[in-house]
Image (cartoon, rainbow, N blue to C red; front, side, top):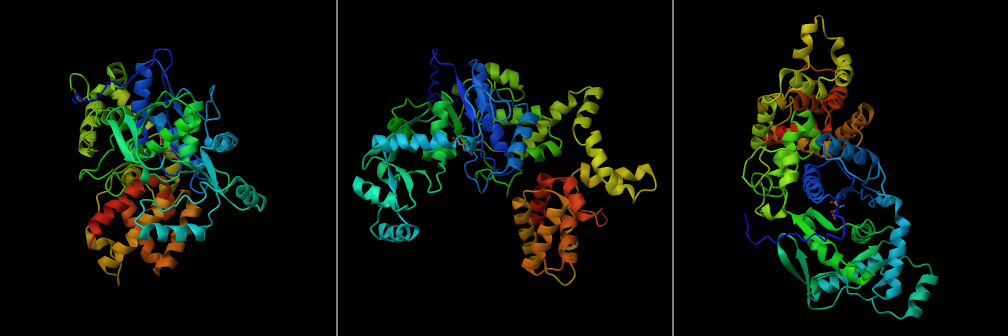
Length: 488
Ligand code: GLU
């Protein structure tokens, strides 16, 4: 263990309050569960509260479907929260889109204090600035030209109704130093920090303003989040200072990494929690696995429950070398947990998984017409319950196409699958038909590839019903496998 990791201060007069703040812009990510686990353990260890806040101020990318999926997956993991959008709490609302007036009010406070200013730069002006700043070798694209314009000029532009944003006055020159609970002091060149936009021209806050205001108003004592937010932290620290507030402690967890040490990504690893559930990983094994990412038990044992982790939890046992998200390890742990189940428990587990009445009822109609005996159900649906073995490369390549062309088509299929929000028959069919037009493929050829990639079966039920039954997360993983297989 690294002896240099300082203990995280806990003020006995203030109850520990921590949070996760996911943006509902995609599928529930395994990184969210990782950060949630550490936040929750810290809260439990100190008798504090663990809060779920939804950061949905990006109106174009946030969806309620994604939010619901995050709730569902976190609950499946057993990472339930004490306060949140769906259960309320004393510091609500917990969904940022319901707190817009609060952010505007706070931007106004900073304007009144002279800590922020209105910037009226047009897109053309910004573009021109970007060019000149680059030529001048400046470290940031915005030249702060509206930072000190006279009040009378501001009033005139406002009266004209000119669109504008609100920017934070960052210090000019010198260094900004933040303290990270695991890394100690980290310093940044102020000249590299832009006058951060706080409020956009449509009146919506940026992540920075909303995040800091909410952490303050929700009385968050420790901000425990992923390492990728370190560069934002000096801006947050500056915001606390501008408001005259005491900042929380900042603790940045190491990034999870693929086997090749790059930041975990769906290209190299399944990242959706829904995938792990559908693939038959037990939630306690997943949590145990995540608990070992950069952290270990005092006796270094590999298998431990969440309760044991909470009991033993301290950040002193964290180490910062990028933890590798190694699926073989996860499978090994999962096997240990599975073997501990009594036959009755295992049956119950199978029933909670895909052998539930609900799931079976949804998939039986797919094969009913194709069955003459009950015994055919299992062979005809093996691709729904297990991982189909990919076929030989050539099997995916339609007549008249090359492997390279097929790989290009599968690349386009992968993009479509990643982007597709509504995983239902009609929207899927529409999206795939559109793709055929875009890339100039006959539906027959493209659909046959999709079928093979998703099911590895030449005869499967109607394609889009099959994709719905497989679910997005598993389809995504199968498409990635095909990409690897077909790579020219
Ligand atoms: N909304 C940010 C996210 O999506 C929150 C980061 C933070 O915890 O401050 O991860």
